[in-house]
Length: 226
Image 1: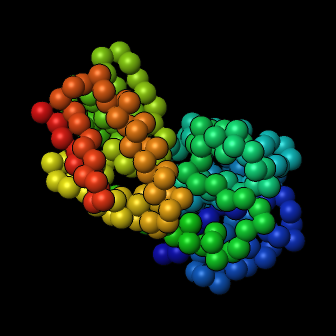
Image 2: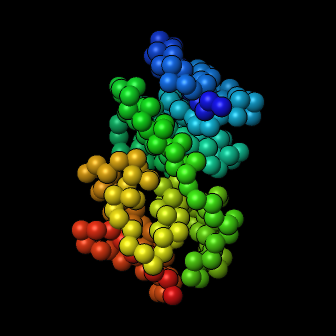
């Protein structure tokens, strides 16, 4: 069965080219030009992934992504946008985006990123709905980390990183395996991103001293919990 893409783009000429190219790659593509109509399609079309422009009539992409996340916490979302400021990128991830591509973009790059997110979604090992990690409770499907009454909502990649390290706990995890699993490649840019995400996780988990993410220099990481 072909994977379904909900593609939201108000530039009709560009949208037609992208839609037809994705269809030649075997995807079922439903294209919408108005952000206000997306949720109706979400509930009827049941896409496997959403490719979402930010500058849209009706509702902008940030608003649409927030609505999607209220209904489906796991649907991968790729933002397409001409907005290039760092704060725009940050806002995209905070509203539920899993990836971000700046216009103009190559369709080949878009396809690679679509395939990567779909692979992550499909190949991620099943965990329990609730995992006890030291003193924390981790809810993988909700992307939620809880300690006592403190609830921390994780981003998609933070959750995937914690999940991967937890599954391979007490073993040395290669950097390239983390990069390929979460970002789809081990480029220098993504490698720097990985360092940032590991630092974030350490900050989130520091309240339990029995948990450590040890750096094995030049190799990777080891996740240890007492």
